[in-house]
Image (cartoon, rainbow, N blue to C red; front, side):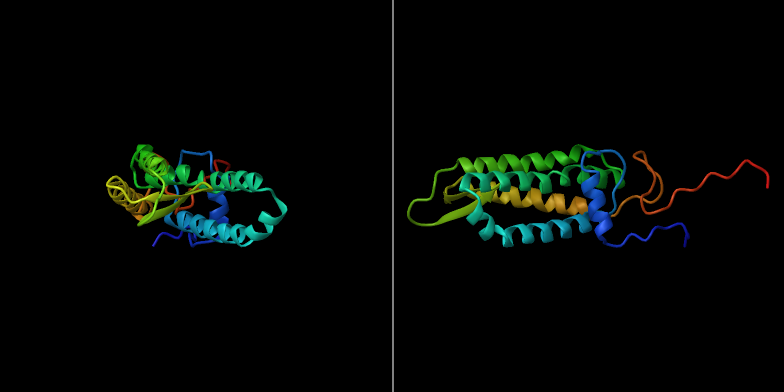
Length: 185
């Protein structure tokens, strides 16, 4: 085995790397970086939502909703470039990230459906907006489509990357070779 392989286990450093590179769409990311950021997101959301009752007491409702919206964006945005870099690691175009657009469109359409009256309904939450929806003939295909796209994105996140350098850059699991010195010793 090549001794230049980097220790690429799930770690806080990898989670922070995904956050720091949240405006970077070039290069490649490993599966461990995705899992690290996902776990970081779960823990961060857990801490924020556990403190929600306290925040609700000290902030007006509109301010809390604004905070929730900003928090959702800050934690949600890095998934876009992370998926692009993950796709690059698989030697795929970052254009597949447009699947996220389908999720946003489906959720927006769900928010525009009529509110729940009496009977069966569905409660959804998107970026701090909560709504109870009526179960209509449109709801089922939207939810099925949303689930299928979500599963497709999950599969794209976990597929193995290509070994070695590809058209998007060097393998992130291997340390780059240092140039040999041209100075005689």
